[in-house]
Image (tube, rainbow, N blue to C red; front, top):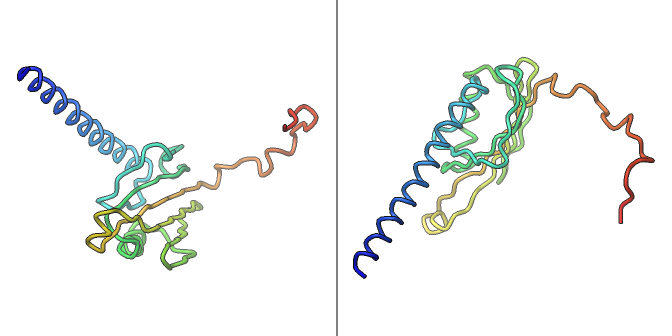
Length: 163
């Protein structure tokens, strides 16, 4: 009985530590890909990439996509980060809305980047008074949309009727 308990404990330890290694490897690999695709766009050092809604298309200056991050820094701290770091990489602020949630719009070489920062409450943050941020970054290249109205030639007669 004691051996079974030890074996189960060992198996559980290996299983859970393996998950952490996979998660850490995913974060490292995603950072490399994002650094390559968005080489001129700063990301907070503590930010973690959320896998499912992140989509990137293209390379270099022809990048379009969306990156979802979480950060341990508050929205105000991330606002200061983007306010200083984007200028050093040539991005220019063209619009902003600052409140509890922050929206920043930057432009560079015809590309547009929209950064949306919202407070992320956690149980630990509730206890300590700190909270992190959810960061949603969308980058659009001017050639990303070729047809302004892709539904113009849609044949409405062949569409199924809704229930």
